[in-house]
Image (cartoon, rainbow, N blue to C red; front, side, top):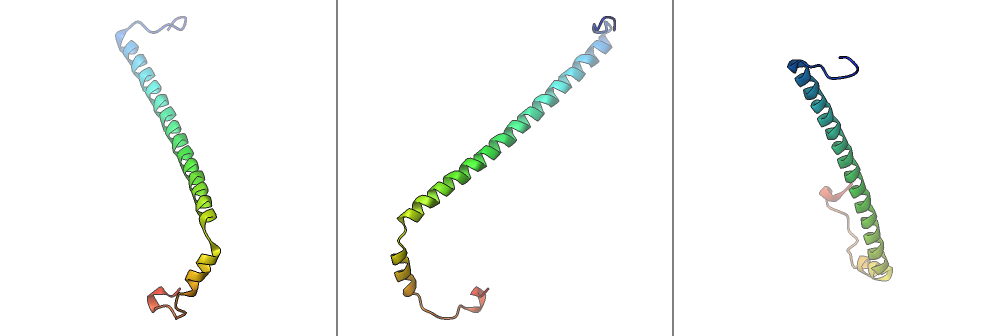
Length: 85
């Protein structure tokens, strides 16, 4: 190749463009995989933040006194064998 030009014979010309297309396809594929990874990571983070906010709202609605009253009604007996730790 003189002066950085493409070779003029057709077989070299075809190989050059096939390898360039392969390279571009590979690069594009890696970029897409990276973007997908970033999107999934962001979705998981947003989901965890939303869950934390939801649980915080539910905790504010809770009433410790009602919880204690409900727990007082539960029989104080030994758990069955399959429920023991």
